[in-house]
View 1 (spheres, rainbow, N blue to C red):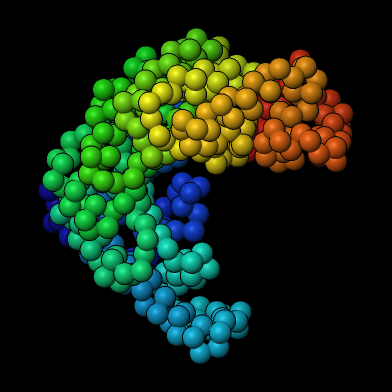
View 2 (view 1 turned 90 degrees about the vertical axis):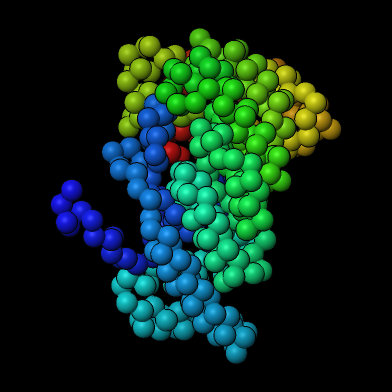
Length: 388
């Protein structure tokens, strides 16, 4: 190895990665790793062509310290004047170096959101050495002792290999929620989309997180099995989650932008995407099979057909099923109006169909764009790509 390759990486200022869960919209984003160590999932557009790397722990600590300094300054200004003016913000930005101004923006955004939670980026922060992660967590809690929640994405493959003592130590150091992209509980689906993990490992990882006392969010991707594997996808995913009993089950409907590897399979007819009608039947099938658990189902994403299919199991299960059955029972023209209204942001859920004004707006959009029950799914596919 060349000498220059052995030099420690130079700190180049505060960093933030490209994504975070919708539920972490108000969180401080602290980048622990860059990109994704797996990065082969055929449905995922994020991090492709980007190299994975671990950030030095010292750099992460410097990021935290930079935000902490700015937070103290913001709190001082707010205490003196009751609020912070745009002039004061401009002056703060003016006094920062280009390398430090991003930490200031992060602090300002976090302050505006209430400073209650922190999210560790990128796709799999728990891949670093447990002692390093614990050091980062302890420093976060030292700088921001009022924080209520620290969360991270993690791969099941990684979690399954962390021993229980280390997971418990992470919990004690402040990590109290983990987001896992389960996507599917079907081995056939997982293999087809190159998820790089089995159902058994997914279940093992989820149970380990729960055993450590850490809140668990499992993400499910309706439609990932395509038309061919839709039923097995629904059944096996429900079975995996029945074994795990995650705190949250979050729905993220499959969309296929032109930039993902799955697009070529879809274009060539090797992967037949589910229509909205098929997707609704799959979600109904999936929720029907959830049994013996107390998870909260969340549909907090613009890609989802039903934002109002949410609730806590088992009590809210009948209500969620009723909503989906109502959609399935619609005549095709009315169903088309809802599909387009949902994708254009006119409706957030089926309950919005009670608004004559919103229906009129969606009907006009269908007329303007020439959308009919026969072509609606092609239009929906294109509209969904905008949200990726």
